[in-house]
Length: 485
Picture 1: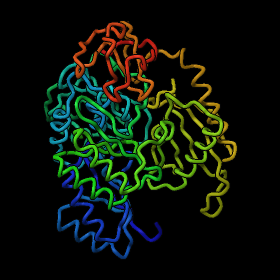
Picture 2 (picture 1 turned 120 degrees about the vertical axis):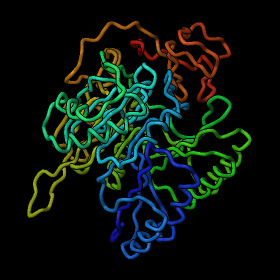
Picture 3 (picture 1 turned 90 degrees about the horizontal axis):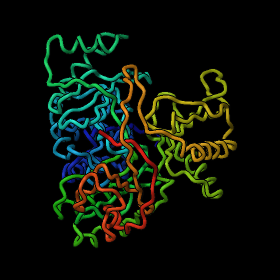
Picture 4 (picture 1 turned 180 degrees about the horizontal axis):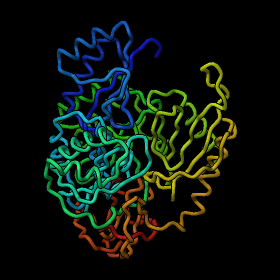
């Protein structure tokens, strides 16, 4: 939008109540805004005409709405809360634990903070500066630090207690800002100089699952209820639709909405008796909820029509050539300062500049170590590509991935403090061919009464996928992976 301000409202953890979102949308709509979107850090974004900004600013201040205008000095705290219960569920990490952590933040962080369940791959682990990942020890978290404007990861020598995450984050923010280029030992000494925290020694690295992006759109069963995933091809959600959605949530006693790093929405806890009401709202606003899985595996810069157009250009080539992209996700970076998440990364740059003008755009193509999007190690595939050559080269990366897939070993993140990995017993992980839900014998399926340690072959013939109700025969062996400890 020309002559407009970009406004950001943080939604800590990607969580907001329908009532609160309805209040925000009502204020925003008064300023002649008709659409909003959700960012890759699970924040609320929209553009307001310059002539209407002063009115909206006054409304926000009157209603105590925290916001940023044309800036991102205070990044949103992102979390895997949106995946809790509907995709992979950890051994001890539950929704109340996320709230315990988030409620502890009395300051607005200036660093990027990620809160992640180590058993999921729906949300990124290491796109923050402070990356907290749940350990196998209840209520304790690994911490991986990534200094600002750096790809280096450093493991904190201790596991952090849930109730201390906010306080430690504030202390680290202060020392990292004041101390410049210091070692993790310096930061550790500085934060412990005047404060004490409940910790345990971190003897090993975190063990992460193989990346597999679950299908996060449409109606899906879990337990006795359903969840609904909503994705928009152009990333915009109309305020009229969201207001109806919030009103239905209030009417049917749904207390939370979840935003995701894939710029989508997830509504949990929908009762079967209310499904027809949800279907009517989707129909009224012409909302499609069955896009292809390959379309859902892309990230672009915030507020970037060019990135969306390039995504669609490459996807049309994939569809024409029936390209297999399962197991990959793609990021398009058209601005140097932007940060996107992907196992395949497309970066735009100008071949040369003249008097401040960027001329003759070309693209560099990268893929991550082991094609793991959570890796911070990039390998260059091709450089200086013209746009019309780009789809074919991206397809070549897909072919490379498919050729190497069977040779990949379990994922282990390399850091400066890495220790020698201890041997782990192997577990055969099965994946539902319909919705990509995993069955790992190491964890079983608590909702279906399947105890941890139950091999797939020992599941009852009537076993159904907990997400989409597909039969046991729909599951396929993914590959043997090391069990998470």
